[in-house]
Length: 204
Image (cartoon, rainbow, N blue to C red; front, side, top):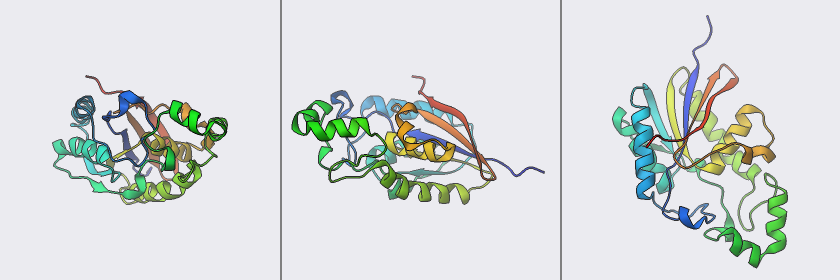
C-alpha cells in the first residue's frame, strides 16, 4: 500500500500597505492592506472544506494575520516559525528599485544579473534564505505526514522552498509566480515532491 501523501497549502500573505509603492519590504513589519484582508478571506473560504491539521506562519505580521484568517474556519491558530521570514534585504529594505538604482547602480546591476546568488547589501542571499527556511519547512512537513497543512510565508521564501522541493536551480526562482494572496499546493509522497497547483490567485 502506498504511503499517504502530505498536502501543503503554501500561501503568500495578502497585499500589504506599501504594495502600491513597489518597495523592497523584506524584514519590514508592515500590515495587510484592506485588499490583503479580502484576499486572505477569499482563500480561507476556498480552503474551508479542507481538513487542515495545522497552520504555520512567518513571524512577520502580514503572514501571521493571513494565517489567522486561513485558520479561523478550522478553529486553528498559527504556529509562528521565524525561519519562514522573508529574505533580509539589508540596507535596501524600504527602498524602491529606482531609489536603489540611483544610490548603488553597480550593486543593483549585479543583483539583477545574479538573482539567486548575489546577497542584498547587509542582508541575505537566496542560499542564506534556503539554509534557514528549508530545514524549518521540512520539519513541519515531516511531523504532519499524511495530513494537510497550511503554511503562510512570503514571495521570496515560497519561491526558494519551491525551487528546493522541485529540484530547480535557485537562479530560476523568479520564474515561479507568487502573487499577493496566491495559493500553491504541494504534495509529498515519501521523499517525492509534486506540484499540484501554482500561484492560484484569490477569487474576489
